[in-house]
Length: 223
Image: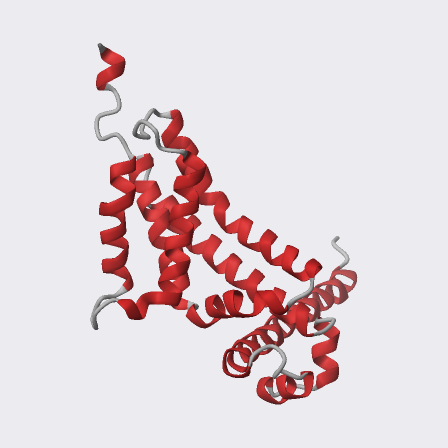
């Protein structure tokens, strides 16, 4: 017979751990969202831990249980943005099917949409990185590098299939796409009213992505 009495405490402890994890994620989200609001209005130097605690509606001590200080909070904001980008890009690439051209266009769209949905966090990355110490800046770079990985994999897939046009550098293509997606969050105001991220993606795919790809890659191979 199974030891139900012994299983019950273990199951209850797992439930308690799950609840703690949910609470920790929720409180971390409160802190990150509050930090974005404060830093984008008053800068990093204007954000004290006391002000952050008040904005997040939690105690200063609780913030320090998750973060070592202001720099850790900023790095966490950028790391969170990088994760949101990676998830959006991965999901769109997976839904695009096997065609490397469509996968690249979908991945770029995902990056742009993620940046559009988190404009304030994107602005924080550019505005405040110079105020951080060398170690924190390196952590920001590493978080951003992780956002390159899905697009890099798709571009490498296109290159292996002979789909890149002559003279196109895979590394430069990935760099250009990621920079364009990031710039949308910073300079979207450049475009007329009503020009949204969907149109931006479509125009950039037509301007940059498709010209970088060979439309009939197998013609030369069959000669």
